[in-house]
Amino acid sequence: MAYGLAVVGTDAGGAKEIVQHNVTGLLHSMGRSETRLRLGSEGRKMVEKMYMKQHMYNRFVDVLIKCMRP
Picture 1 (cartoon, one colour):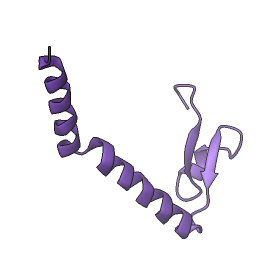
Picture 2 (picture 1 turned 180 degrees about the horizontal axis):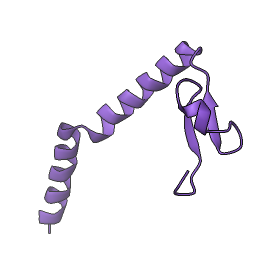
Picture 3 (picture 1 turned 45 degrees about the vertical axis):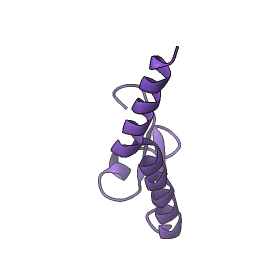
């Protein structure tokens, strides 16, 4: 919030004392475990697909090969 950005958090702990829902940010209920698990799983899949070291190495090699072609 100090940077002028909205905050997204859970309605548990200190976040709900600081963030005003729909005013300074969004608070998500902790009770929706199926949504939380699904979003977490999809996020992990994306990170594994796009940002793991092996993927980055492969992309780097592809760039080098393209640069070496006439």
